[in-house]
Image 1: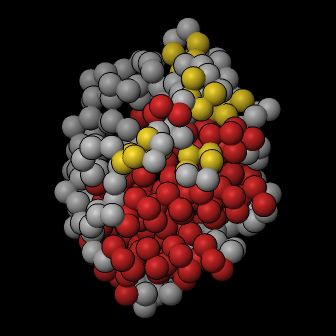
Image 2: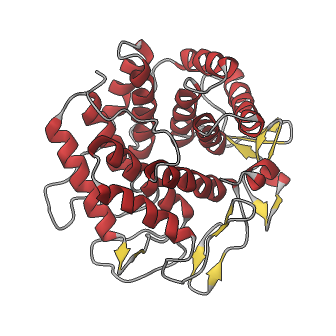
Length: 340
């Protein structure tokens, strides 16, 4: 994996949210969402000076975002926190990143991530994706220690807001429309059911993920939902498609592969990686293999040339998942037994 563009977007204060082309748009500031993502990714990647620098920058941002309020601030521009209201999604991503930080190779990152998690305590949300991030944070903690009190508390907190699949086999999705980071929901349902030893729940989550993969497939490639989402009666390719969809799909399929060993899920990860390489509705590359940058959206006639944090993190993470299922990296998800 090439981390050049991630390094370009990241300074000692965290990762910059947006970019003008390849240039960091400093005026956009840094947000809790992206720094949570960055910490979790940097902690999972092979340890070296580059990944340590990224992890420390993201962790430092989250520590400061938390230090001045009972909830995480959302965004900082320069040295000033903005008036943006706190975001449940951002808090969920922060918790997931911090949980990943407790498994980092560096003792100081593990210690500081744990300390910040302990300062948060309980966190529950009525929003499905926020709850999904909380569940995934909890499962990461419980994989290390099934008795972890924070992990157990967060598992219950997240489960309370996580919707299950619906009864309609034609549209089992727990929402009226597919929106964004869709595969996050079946991944969290799968992780929750596995953690609780719920065999039926594991099977339902896998069926829901398989339905989503089929729903977002056109021919031999992924045709992800556009920014406007997609409902039951909407068919055919639509744009702008976002790299976060490919990243979430790769994450979920990797977990499914580790838990089941089914080669179908490894092939799904590779197809998500291929979406970045041009196997998509427009036949255009969405990731720069020279710099490791992800472009901000796939359009009918090209790509959004801006290379922001969310898209770049999704591209690098998808490359990492591809390496994992292809045997070029060590798995980070246990494949047997529950954790709670």
